[in-house]
Image 1: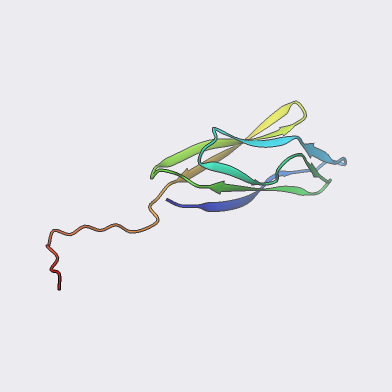
Image 2: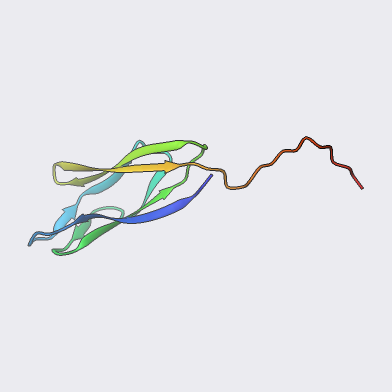
Length: 100
């Protein structure tokens, strides 16, 4: 298993007015979690919204989800992908162990 937080520039406001992000959610929920921002966020002109997402898989497999960014009545999808891997190395041997 891995537990990783990644931050990325999700949207840039190239306009002249401040943009309000109404919400940011992950669909489906489970292995990806929004760390920041939370709640309504304002993005000033010539500014970029930085989104931080935590990936915490419960299984060793590939995961796909979408972060949906909501502005007024519009929704914008951001693709999220991750691979769950083992945190520790497991080994096996065919030789018997001697106890001293």
